[in-house]
Amino acid sequence: MEERACCDCDVIHEEIVKAVKKEVPPMEEYVSMANLFKMFGDPSRMRLLHALSIHEMCVCDLAVFLGITKSAVSHQLKSLRLSNLVKYRKEGQVAFYSLADDHVETIIKIGFEHIRE
Amino acid sequence: MEERACCDCDVIHEEIVKAVKKEVPPMEEYVSMANLFKMFGDPSRMRLLHALSIHEMCVCDLAVFLGITKSAVSHQLKSLRLSNLVKYRKEGQVAFYSLADDHVETIIKIGFEHIRE
DNA sequence: TCAATAGTTGAACAACCATTCAACTAAAAA
DNA sequence: TTTTTAGTTGAATGGTTGTTCAACTATTGA
Image (cartoon, rainbow over all chains, first blue to last red; front, side, top):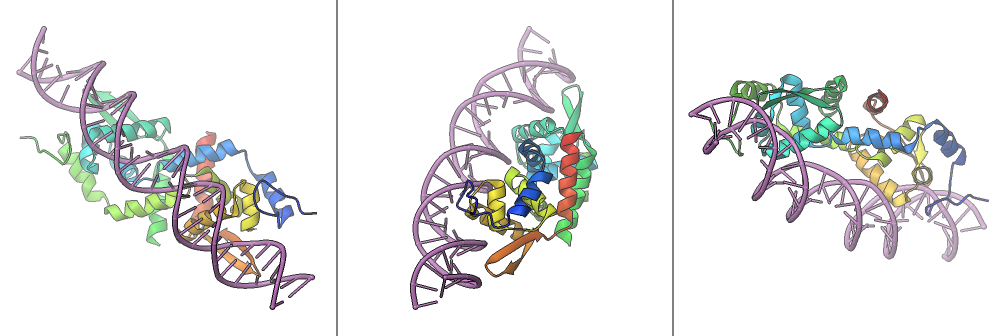
């Protein structure tokens, strides 16, 4: 007898599904990974991260550079901080943001490789 | 006089902005890169790609494995095909999908590294 | 030829997200 | 102290997107 699953499908190659299921980490890890790569899934944020890989920048500079409001930049930077991708040092009123994770430059590099091949 | 830009900001460090602008590729490249990483920005798609990195799979198997409908899987696979991340071979009615780009495994590996540190 | 099944497609919908606006805090300059 | 400015925050909004459903194609087997 075929085993019915949660959806409208028969399991055609049950052995393969079982084998893969055995090798695969729990769902939460994929949620975390997806949240990481979501940060690279927006052109504006991608440019922001690439800019920071060239030079540290304050919120105003980034706003001018990206052509969006300071508020929008600040919201994006907050997300990036929560994902541990950027950090900042404060000098008076000015917050200088920079990259906080070596993976960021690697990911950007892979991105350029992929689209240019 | 401070130079006014498109938004509510003064350019605080004009030299830096100019220097970074000079080093940076045109917007379209960031759009392409963002579209690439969008594919990794969803837990379900992330699992799908990771599964395919372990073994080729057909649409039905993937649907059972992921716990979503065949239709949903097919939609996802179409996006992934358009991004040149997966390919398939057909055997009768069955379409066996597999990874089409070496970068995929690298990106997944970086993802695991980031969340496990 | 006819029924069953793997896969695709488009419409519909709910959830998510990037941005703006307005109001706020805090530090520097006047 | 008062004003200006860098930055943050929360609500509102328009656009995007992941999923399902229903209808379809195409291949296999009876």
